[in-house]
Length: 118
Image (cartoon, rainbow, N blue to C red):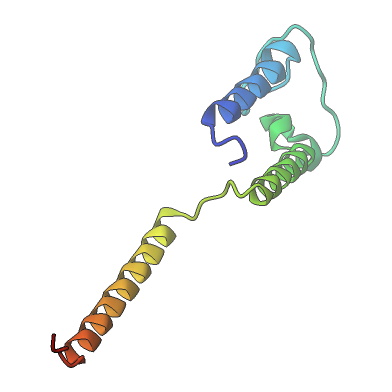
């Protein structure tokens, strides 16, 4: 939302997976890879992600979730958010309906005006 581009998010995700597997040698989404280094993640499964890998651990979920909330807050402050399409349609229909009503009221009022003699 902040950059209005999917390239930034896609690059971030690919970079994460590249460093997680081929560089550090940890599991990626449950798959085992051999990496340049061999990282050993120890601790309770809820914190480390267990057999699925670090991306399923509570630490990563909290860090990524907090970062996401921060970026959403920055996007909102910079007015870079958009209403979802269903809400945009509802607002458009409400505006169109209000315009039609005001036009019909205006036409009704104009028809009641006495004609001016020239």
